[in-house]
Every structure is written in C-alpha cells, then in structure tokens.
Length: 200
Figure 1 (cartoon, rainbow, N blue to C red):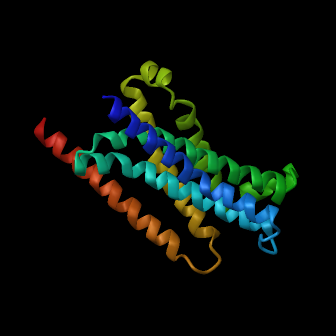
Figure 2: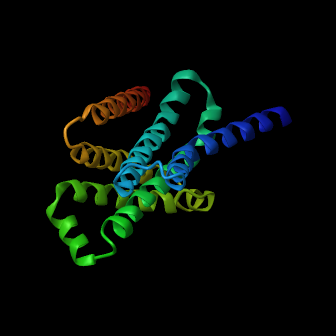
C-alpha cells in the first residue's frame, strides 16, 4: 500500500511539473529577453493553447481508464482540470490587463462583436462552476448531480475549440488535430454509455 501511494505521489508530482513547464518557460524567456517582438501575443497564444491541451488531457483520463483498466489514472483528472482552468484564467488575465489595459468599454465591444472573443468567454464561464465544484465537499453535496454538471466540460471544450480555431489567422492544423482527438474521446464515452444503457 505504501509503495502504491508513493508511486501515485510521484506521478502527481510529475503531472504538476509537466503542467508548470509552459509557464516557467514563458517567464524564463521573458526574463532573458528572448520573448517575441510582441510578448503579450506570445503569452496569449501559449496560455490559451496550454489550457486547451491540458483540458483535452483531463478528458482523456476516463476513456483511458475504461480502455486499459488503469484506475489510478482517475486520480489525476481533477488536477488536470484545475490546471486547465488556471491557464484559461491566465489567458483571460493577459487579455484583460496586458492586451486591453482594463479598458472595459473596448473589452465589452470585443466580447459583443467578435465571435472569436464570444466563444472564448463562453468557454471560460462554463469552466468556472466546474473548477469551483471540483472539491470533495462539493462532490458529496451534489451527489449524482455533480456528474451531470461536469458533463458540461464537453460544451466548454467545443467553445474553446471554436475560440482556438477562429483565433488562428491562417493555419488551423493544430485546432483540427485537437478537435479530432476530442471527437475520438467523445466517441469512446458515447460507446460506453450506449453499452451501459443496453445492459440495463
């Protein structure tokens, strides 16, 4: 049992380290003066892309567990989900403060007139209640409703993918790859639900 706990703790530490790499790398480049000509644009792109990638990783946990029987993977889902929210919040913060200078009139105009910004706003707002209710206390309070609520993550993922795709000026290969992965993961989930319902 002790060895098992030690392995899980070591794996969680590895997940923490991996999730922090993009942030540390961005700060390191900025401190060393190696950032691009437009560091705000670089931070916006990196934080947003990282949020999407980690969110996809969190969605992959349950299908991976069901396909492989590796139940330990479930222990990392909440951690990955919170890191995805962290990078999404960082992405929003860079946009509001560094890109727009907290000029709320311009921000409101952006949100209401540009589909690219609207989809990103929707994605973030959907992630907020998921992050808030990720604690064990909320899981106990909500019971089965917690599972229903957290299925909203797929809607948030779809909105984030729209934001990511529309945010690309020309090359949309990365969003398409991410979209294909999400489609496969969702297909695995649907297959499981269908089999479960058929058994009932």
